[in-house]
Image 1 (tube, helix red, strand yellow):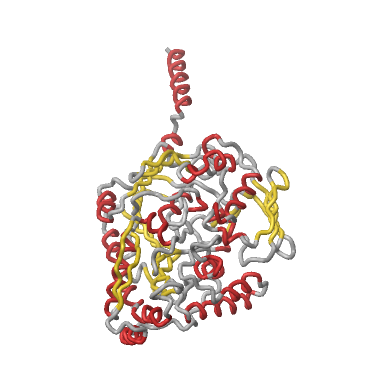
Image 2 (cartoon, rainbow, N blue to C red; image 1 turned 30 degrees about the vertical axis):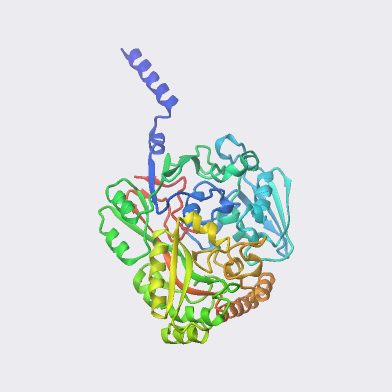
Length: 519
């Protein structure tokens, strides 16, 4: 009998081993259900992931050479990721990164090597293959010293070398072989090294991810992620209340936060960075080629009223064309105050005594649409009528980059240094519909010399002075009208443990890591 039991136990253990049936495997069988305010994803090639929808999910699939400590956006807490260590020359222009060994790509694409890193960073720095190429213009050469060592040489110093190599934007490392094999299909079938791999995308329904069992930090405790596209706030909230979702993209307004906090077993996370919303005005085209019309727009906006609409817990007034808290930010810039009477007078001076109507393309993304509708009402008080052409979010991104809208409402966060924000949104090289385009919708270039000089300066006080001067020039020329900074908001079941304290996330959503679990 004892022998029979031993044999039975041995068989059971063999079966359990064969199917991975143990405590860890049970945890890895869990599915995290995430609701996102989206009709569909756009581009999952991380070097083209510009919308919040795409940024959130690519962060679960890719790594950088270095990373922000999970839950933090503090540059002082950047730590090793795919590179286990690095060193730089005394002049700060030569950097050598030593890669971890044994890091595996998804889908059987093999071990990460220096060749993949060189390929990825060259791809990031090329306008045809990256939306973030401008961030890498200071790089002179990138070379593989050996299979696990990469050397980067700069032609000029930049404010934060590690900042452009983090797990963010162009810093993500891709599989060279996968990009070359998959070509244009890579945007929907990406290959990275992160804790989760893309299984499939069902258009207008979901993106399904699976745990990367060979992840170098350890197999994830979550087995699958179902990233569901639910553009309707009401539908998404109802699904969360009915326990059909574990994590829900929230609305950055106080009413939503207060209501959701009352849902049983729910935690509402409000975290950095604040996304700065700006009305970018195309200074090359009518009507905004007339600075009086731009000044009228600035006077017609009431920022304190926008904050009251959103709520004190989730929003704060914008004070510059650079977000608060960024290195180099200044609010001593001459930002025009709300003054509807002055706005109407400026319109009359510009030949529009009876007001003006402006056709504007805008996204259907609920949070952005709601805020734009409030701005629309404010502008109407001053005689400015916005004819909103509402389109799907991915279409919005495509059309604004084609210069099809004279005004662009854009809400964004970037690496927290003034250089990157001003370079991407207000430098002449970044003008849309140019070979080096990024997100300069205003076509302003008046502060280029100050931005460029600050970037290469090795004197931090001189950098700050130049960045402040650049902000004053851009505000004076009304290249854009700063509105508000909205903090990020997600709701989760209280049994969802991120594995870290969430204070901030540069991917604009909670980072799901190997340590994340459903208790």
